[in-house]
View 1: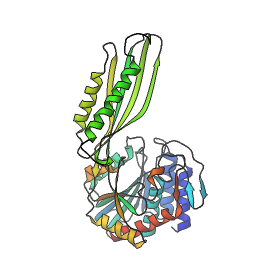
View 2: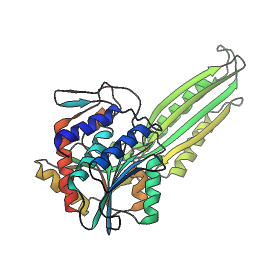
View 3: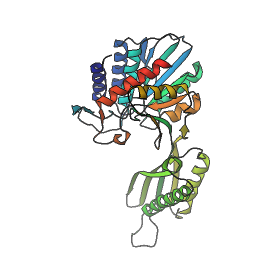
View 4: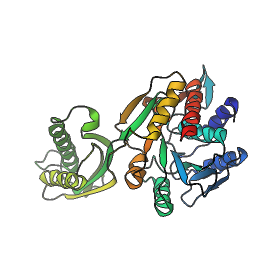
Length: 361
């Protein structure tokens, strides 16, 4: 696959809308492209993942390149302007996935190693359905020798780890009353809980420096309503978790905070989802050394990142315990933004870095 074909691959991937849970057309296209580029095997699995293999299935070593094909909503006109390719998913994370696909196509079959490229489903939906199936598949057949996660790091950087995540959904309901009365309405109660969460995280963070070691809250959504007899309020809060965070203790503390602001006549329900512990990989591995060498060969100055978001590394890393890193072209500050785009020069550099690095493993 030459540079022109690699750019065309990414552009056509971006042109196919693939929201979480609706990746089918994109998966079929990616499998078609893998087959056209002489992958040994390519198919869509039961989770909707696009999976392509290069090399002998019985090879003693397997290297998994795990990206995701789903994106957040928001259509951005796909176009190339001033060397930049615009479109939803250009950075997060079709750029890295296309780079994986192109690099493995260039390498082709190699003795003793099998490359498995995965375009996973539902990473953006927090369910990570595709990554969980891949995780379990390789737990059953044997963990990979190494794994790369396809997320934007910039072509000169490698991501060592990601924070964890907890989602907390509060539902408050109670009888309606006059706003001039002395009662505390459900909206006030929900807001009081959010303020208590902020206070809790501030107290925690006094002992830690830097966002990766801190507990970071965000108000994801809020809604309220009434029918004249009863009123309700819903809040979703996201918590970005530092390493070694005790999830059970944190959930208990969040529940206690809700109970403290609960008015006698209100119905409080607090539920949790999206639990993922933080994960930090080892940087003293052949995988890391191969990537750093590949970056230097392209004239780059390599460095490591720790990300405050989550990725499918949080899903497979703790289970596989193999050498693992995240790598991919693109500026992650453009994730989910209206101006999402990728520098074509950077994308092509990342492919060459991957080609060099994978060739050394």
